[in-house]
Image (cartoon, rainbow, N blue to C red; front, side, top):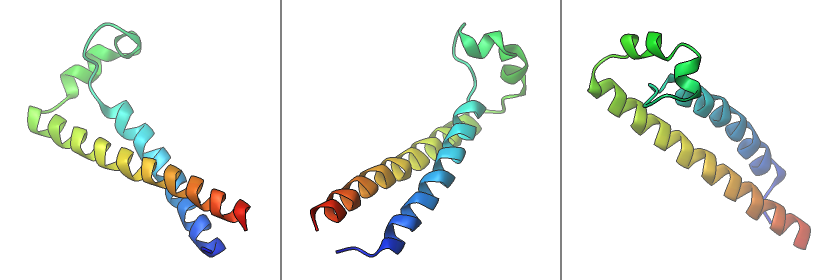
Length: 85
């Protein structure tokens, strides 16, 4: 059985990645007319840098999203093992 510290570590990592994922998603430039353009989309599109910065932002967002998903799956598996014993 996995120790309780494993679950605490996953919970802390989950909170950190949740905040990071929210911030990274909000940093993305709006692609069309939606809620992003309603709340200052014109300002963010003029401040957005080159396409290299946007590609790096995409990569970081995907990486943090994968870590976030792994934390969710890990907590689910830990909970399943903890309930079984």
